[in-house]
Amino acid sequence: MFNDIGALELVTLVVLAVLVFGPDKLPKVVQDVSRFIRKIREFSDSAKHDIRSELGPEFKDFEFEDLNPKAFIRKQLSENEDLKEIRGSFDLKKEMNEVADAVNGKEPEGSVRAGVGGTPGGGTTPDLLKKRERPDQGERPPFDADAT
Image (cartoon, rainbow, N blue to C red; front, side):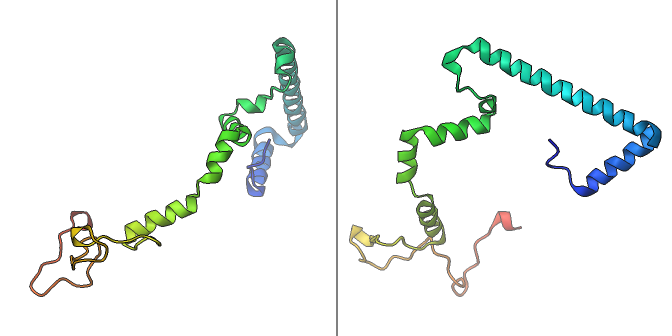
């Protein structure tokens, strides 16, 4: 229930409780709070039992944790055979590497570049996607509005 509370936060809460309620009333307050939490848990368990009994035998494998959207999606993705097949045929790392190579101006392995006239390797056209080291003599560098 309190998985995300650290040690320092817990000590702060205890000191705050002692200051607010005082050392005399603190045990009574802790008892009352624990009794209240116990009653809430009993009410919740009773409600879950009533819902399961009302749904009938066709929902015997129903879990309330499945109502959480993340848990529901995770369960559906792990049980669906069609999605497993699609996920097995899709290689995300390979796709990401191809996109990164295209962005960086590298050629993917096994591809053939077409030159002028559509012939592979023919012609000497400049690669407009590659960045030049320095602009030619007398040529101004390109203006980048986002860089200013």
